[in-house]
Length: 489
Image (tube, rainbow, N blue to C red; front, top):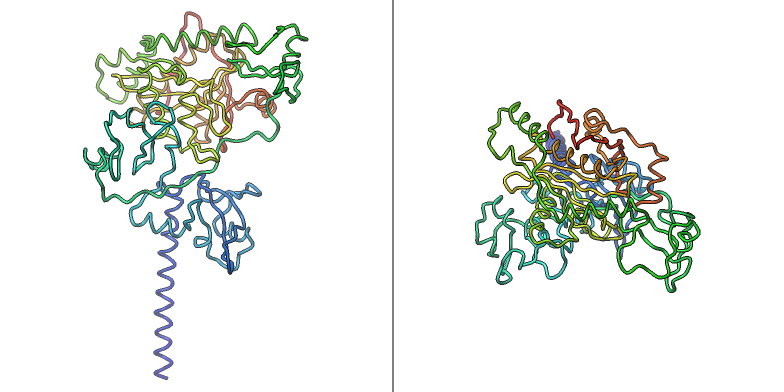
């Protein structure tokens, strides 16, 4: 009897301990799906160990509080993902679902509980200051890449090196910036899956005949020519047969499919070369009103807010710090937009580069500047007179709610109106739909209209967003009607 009671008590204590361990494990694993946990888009896969090798059964990526399956596009819980892989009896999804670097979800949860943080390979192969590739120096903390020359470093630092922002955030001081070793644990670097939504149909093709064939070795009727503004493609023979132009060779300079595209391109280049401009008084008044509503201090800087249009292709030295600041704002406000190669698309979009099959050569960056500091930024691409897109726009957290985003958008719309651009489209996250539709007059674009644009143009659409569109105000005397009750950015 005593032996039975002793065993029974031991089993009770073991059961209590197991329950406590399971409870702690559940809380531990919840951190993966909380802020500063596993980022959306992180590549995941379910693995099982065999006698000689590890087998991958199913792939997906983290999204919200679950895992999106790669084969059926359904969002599943980790347990459901395990069952979907045919391993429901195991009931250990966190020990069998692994990231691209081989760590299990359980490993990552333990690391998070010990103070490590997760980062993505946002440095890619482009300098965060000038946007060019080459011999790059990577920050030990955030993984951003820099040319030593862009940082005015006379030599490559030894040991762990931290960029100025990370050194300031962690109180590391100048030694860390110059390369001395630090005690901060290196972050867990996670590769994200592509979040740019790929069209479910073939895109491109001649804008006239809609055929996809082309000549690559000789110049003939099936040679493809791209418009340097709207980026549409045309067969040389179709251009001649339609009476648009009769090309005898591939143009050596810029080529435009119509007068509107040529005019818009010229206006964009002029705006880039003109540099920084003071925003109109009506836009400054909006900023002043927002400051008054929030009880913020108003000084002369509020009346001399500036804006400008930038192009990474222009290589103006004075524009590089502004482009770098814009990229930093987007990376602060948005999750990384990462291609299959693991490179972040945000720098490529800001600097107008081609990367991982994505073409952003026609992208321009529009910024709002206060006291020489970029406070708000947007990316703009104009596909001719019919449509333009605004794939990203953001205000740095320190300056949100002060009217800067409203003023920047007004500058963009006024500029589009001056070019007689008819419509503006943008991808909007669910939580931002009401702002765009109720305050700015956007509506959801019809699916057929979006498909038509995607077939002809390289429009930017992100997973989990809705594509909105509005008619650009045709503004007399370049004035813009601004909503009085615009919410905080």
